[in-house]
Every structure is written in C-alpha cells, then in structure tokens.
Amino acid sequence: MNIQRQAGFGAFGAAAGIAVLFAAFVWWTIPGPGTGMDRTSAVVAWISVGGVALALIAAHVLIARVLVKGAQDGHGGTKERGR
Image (cartoon, rainbow, N blue to C red; front, side, top):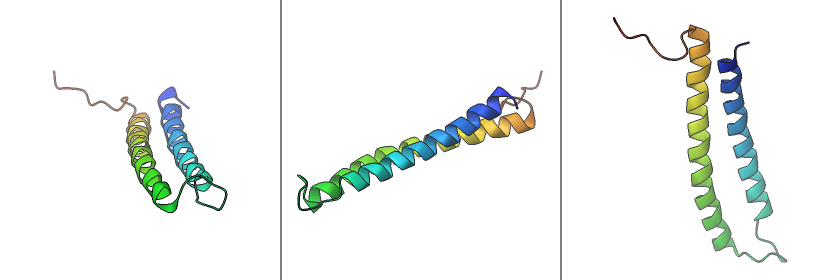
C-alpha cells in the first residue's frame, strides 16, 4: 500500500475522530440539574462548535477522496499537462 493511500485513510480517520469529539462535546454539555449551562447556552455552543466541526470534517473528507483517488489512478492526483 503506498503512502498516498495511507494518508487518505488517515484523513478519513481524522474526520471520524472529529465527529466523535463533537458527539462527546454534546454529551458533556447536555443541561442537567447540576450543570452550569442552561438549554439556550448549550444549543448556542452546539451550533457554534458544530459549524467548526462540520467544516473540518468536510475538508478532511475532500482531501481524503483526492488522495485515495490519486493513489488508484497512479498519477498522484495530478494530471500531466500536455507538453
């Protein structure tokens, strides 16, 4: 397995890790009787952190798809320019 394919799978793994971290963040910030956040503050936090998490996940998936496709094509993800 070449390094480009491994890097692509690593980027997919990083995207999954970011999703797990966001789920953990939501779990830890669920409002309860002994917590310091009310429901409105929790929802605002979920939306703001979720937007950043979504952007990071999208970037990692995009990069991973380019890397894996480039490894399959055998040309490193770049097309040769006509000479």
